[in-house]
Length: 147
Image (cartoon, rainbow, N blue to C red):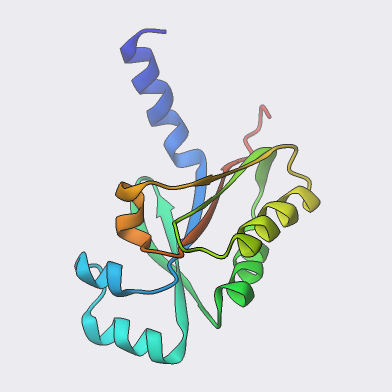
């Protein structure tokens, strides 16, 4: 595959990818200027965890959840699994500091929902800048007509 063909394939795939993640804390988003300090403080006091959707390569604030990550992640998965997804491959990703029982539970729930393969991996420092320690996310491809 040529470099140009690879670039074109990636550009065509971007709109098909559904990715949601939930930061455990908002201080990293505040430090990056994506959330105000008062909003981050308020979210911490009320235990609000926003779902961040990655749409066409942009970070978009989605639904807000309340509670611990152990309570939030099943709700995140419920919303995610309601979408029309290609269930051949799914991913669970997490930042250092995330409860591994929550991560394993997310992968197990995706398999129960019919995903043939679910890969789990820890994200690196570049992606952790947005989510901070303890963040968790899920991603898969939208189902398309020829699937």
